[in-house]
Image 1 (cartoon, rainbow, N blue to C red):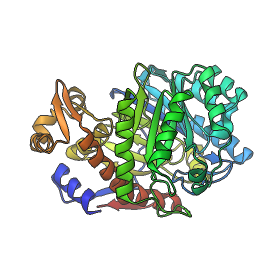
Image 2 (cartoon, rainbow, N blue to C red):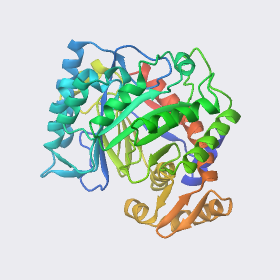
Image 3 (cartoon, helix red, strand yellow):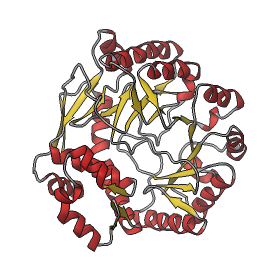
Length: 417
């Protein structure tokens, strides 16, 4: 809390907290934005994993049918003012378990393609239980080019701590490889109780040997509203494992493409979070515009009711100050380990050096990043400190706002200090 508050004051030059208010605009102004991403949330799961913080409910076929109709209408409501198709870099389906609406994904994709030309591919999160020929054929036919597999670990002890089981993950990963998707991302969690450095490095090796083009490694974070039986390992142990990951991948010729992501050289790269701006559709989805950040309601019934009355399902809106928007941009630029001067100037109308010259100079002196042609690249030292910051941000901001949104469909406001 102290760390995030101090950085907020330093980077925004203000003691005012971030305040999300119950303000629902009837139009999202995104037409002039570059590098626009699209996100669709599928809020259904067969069962609820205790460690997962994302919004989801048990699958119900009738509710899913109502949800799809509302989702298609939300897309029309958001995009109705467009005079022509707009370029979007990517489309990503997250959840929940998107494959539970497998037969609907093509229709949703076609609806979005009425308004957008998707240039860099379509990604879908896939639960290991859904890795089979039928699902993979359907996804490929719908135009999906990128899969993110929520394997979490190949180690039985670690999976037991997460309430999961190993259902022949290696064979399923090999099956995915045969379909030739451009990106096969394997999500792995480090810092799980009972996990060792050796077992996690074995997870990474196993993933790459059997078909992954990239591996995303996420720290196990115990959200206050999660029902975890076990607690994460200590921060000291997390640091040890993360350092081992970096060394292991460097020795294997695997490139670090973000703070927590590592990819085979010469393969396509993908991240669901590093976009200069994006539109989010579905309950709990977020939208990032030039001057604001918006969160949809976390209630499926309220989402459906709002859309059926021709209103956007926005629950909360944060209006950015100029420095607040710059702060948000820098946060996710650092996650990708690259602060691009041209992109920052395009977004903010002023260079990063002019706005944050002292901070960039200080970070360089502390060894957090190195100046290169066109911007600043995070070092491994900087990446570790970002890892610490991101966990603090998750605890202070995301945990609080998501927990309140779970309990109140349309909160009056949320104050994040």
